[in-house]
Amino acid sequence: MLQKKQADFEVEKDVVSTIVQLGMAQYVFTLLNLVVNTKLKDRVIRCIDGRTPGGIHIAPLLEDEWEESVNLAVEFAKKAKAEAITFHLDCGAVKAWLERHKMDTSLENVLKYAEKFAKEVAERLKLTYRLEKISGHAGFHRERAVYYSDVDFDPSTDDRLPTGFFINRKYLLQEHALKELSVALQIATGSHGFGKLFSQEQPFLIIVVAGTEEKQEILREEVQATASIYGKTVRVDGFVMPER
Image (cartoon, rainbow, N blue to C red; front, side):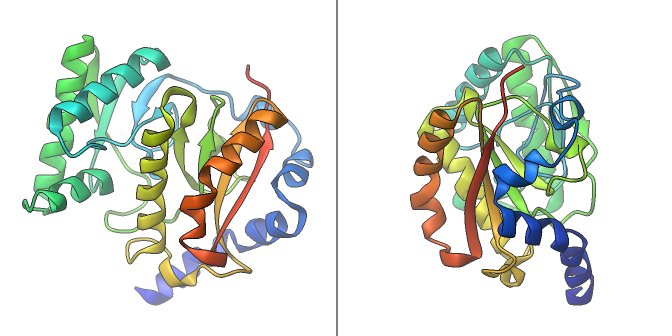
C-alpha cells in the first residue's frame, strides 16, 4: 500500500514543483485556454471530495445537528441554483459525523447515511438525487490540493491543474467554508490521504480562486489560520479567474 501511495504521489510531483517555484498566478498564466477548459458542464451538487469532480460542491453533514446540516445544504443549493444532488461511497464527511456521534462507520453505514442526507435535501428542493461513482478507490484520497473558490469552475477538466477537493466559497458563509477546509486538510494529511508524504518541497496546496485581486487577498487571509496549523507542509497560493 505504501509503495502504491508513493507511486500515486509521484504522478503530480512535477506540477506541484512548478507551482511552488513559480507561484500559482504565474503558473496559470502559462496555461492556454484554461478558462474555456474549466467551464462548468452542470450544476449538480457533489461532495467536496476530489473523487467526485464537476458541478458544485458541499460537504454533507457539516454541522453536528442533522437538521442544521440539511438546512445548510438546502440554502446552498438555492444560492447555487442546483439541478440535482448526489451522494457517494466512502464519504469522509459522513464518516466523521458518524464518528462524532459514536455510530457505526462501516462502508455500508456511511453510504446509508450519505443517501439519507441526499434524499432529504433533494425532497426539500424537489430535485432528483443519485449515487455518484467515485474516481479512484474507497479508502484512499489522491488530492494534492484544495480549491477555495469564489468563482464557478471545474479544475478536474484540465489535467494541468492539481487534483483537489473543491470548496464553493461563493455560496457559503466563512465559518462553513472554513469547516470544509478543515475536513479536506484532515483527510489529505491523514492516513486516507498522502499524509506524511507532504513536505515543504511538495506541500499540500490551498489554492484560493477569486474574480479580482482584492477578493483573492481577502480569501487568502481568511484561510491562513487554518493552514498555519500544518506548518510548512501546507502552502496557501492562488490566482484570479474572471467570473463567466
